[in-house]
Image (cartoon, rainbow, N blue to C red):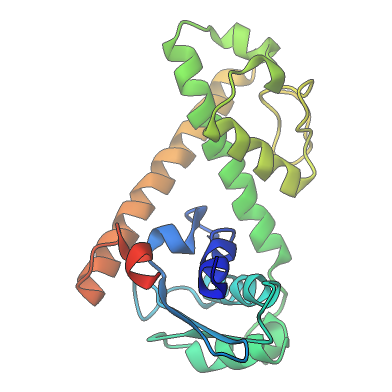
Amino acid sequence: MTVEAQILTALEAVRDPELDEPVTTLGFVASCTVSAGGDAQVRLRLPTYFCAPNFAFLMVADAYDAVSAVVGVRHAEVILEDHFAADAINAGVAARSGFVQSFDGLAVAELDELRADFVRKAVLAGTDRVCRPLLAAGASTDDLAEMTLGDVPSTDDLDRLRSRRVELGLPSDDGSPLLVDTVTGEGIGAEALPLHLRRARLTQVNTEANGSICGGMLRHRYGTQVQGELEEVR
């Protein structure tokens, strides 16, 4: 596998924090090049010029970390293009300055809690994706309240849900409750379960809608289809 291919594979772990999807799948990777000496440059693009700078900073910083960790990369450069805060973000990430220092006088806190909030939303959305097929197959809400992760048939959605729960330090082994509070990690009882499932469903619908809107804006802005863009970059 070429170094370029390894970088693109590494970037699959970098997610849009709001959409919980890889930047590669979303079409946010505009280009990836590596010199003979191992100098790697990745260019990122977003759906609009005014995408939230905190979201953008997270993606650029995560991409920098992912690219830097690839064997064969001597120096990594990640450049955000066509964004109103690109200069501050690119300079801050390159200098490893953090969000507050990069936006001196404008930002009051680093982005750890924001990231955690979005992972909590990803857990809720993932809960909906795992539970809806179970309900469609005949499981009752009482059944769900008693189920553990090990009781659920293995799927990509279940693996993804486990992964997001691990990120938050929530119970994620086979014996853990299928339904847990995204803050405390405690199981959701039968009484509270209907409301929890409605929240999960609304979160997933909102995520899907935002993803569709972002995809449409990206295609309109750059005149390209998101699907297949990764193959074009390769």
